[in-house]
Length: 128
Image (cartoon, rainbow, N blue to C red; front, side, top):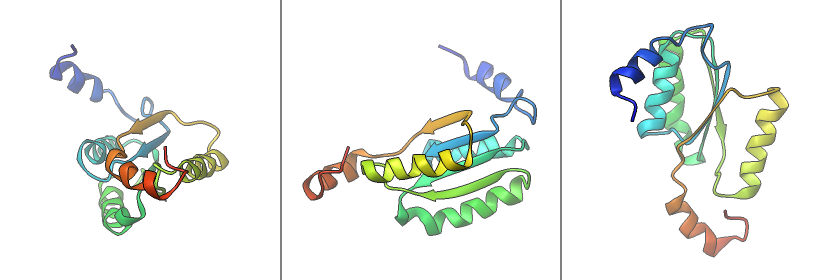
């Protein structure tokens, strides 16, 4: 197992040259995903982040995006609404990013789909 000290040393190497140019964070509206976005933006690197989350998180995430912009004006964080437990919405989010970016350099999946999935299965045949 990699030690915490090694992780910190590796993270300290992230800068404009080494940072991922385009990142997609699915989830990340709280917990480890949100902290990871903050840490990446906090490196000061020029990065574009597509932050995908449920419609119910949008208002709270607007304040988070403003906080990130103040932390690093070179970072661009783009809120992208999507309920990824629904296959049609997952596909739509993918198409949105694909239209704008030739590639992504980092994909971070931290969405909590278990609870919404339980209620969606009964409601729609489109649930994952």
